[in-house]
Amino acid sequence: MKVFLFVIAVLSLVIISGCGSSQISSNTKSETTVVPVDITEFITEFVSNKTAAQDKYRDKYVQLTGFVSDRGVDSGYKEASGGEFIGAFVTIGANQAASSRNVQCFLDDEPHSIASAAAVRGGDKITVKGEVEDIQNTSVQLKNCSFVETPW
Image 1 (cartoon, rainbow, N blue to C red):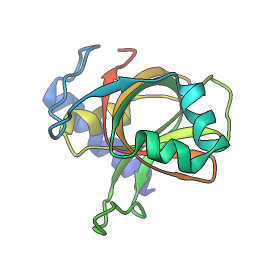
Image 2: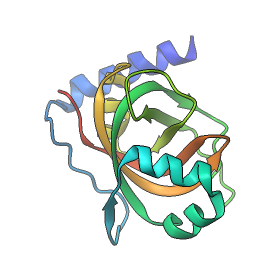
Image 3: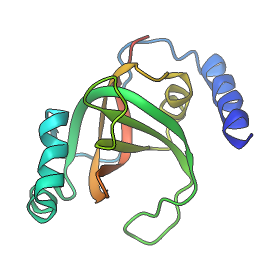
Image 4: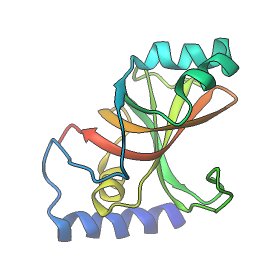
């Protein structure tokens, strides 16, 4: 029920904000460099050698293209600073088939990012950018994510 209410609220934001561009600009906090990375290679690096991948990508922004497998609201995510973040997320994988190996993107709090999260559907091909944080099981987590390209 909470997810349904979230989707309704966010869709209202979409209508109000007029978010209809296929290229969505973002004012994510000051980023130095965004590194485009193949999603399959990115996930494989973390699953194969978590420590090396964390050293390579820690606190860096990456840009990934993948297929939506899930979206919603997560109240359990905690930033490195220890503060609780309650917000939207989108999970993407390398292909349209469901997989346990994926990237979970916790969205920034920009209205267009949250509205876009409500608009995406399972199987949509999207491009996101975000700051690499950690891996939980076989799901790599990004924070401060925003949409770079969407199907609409």
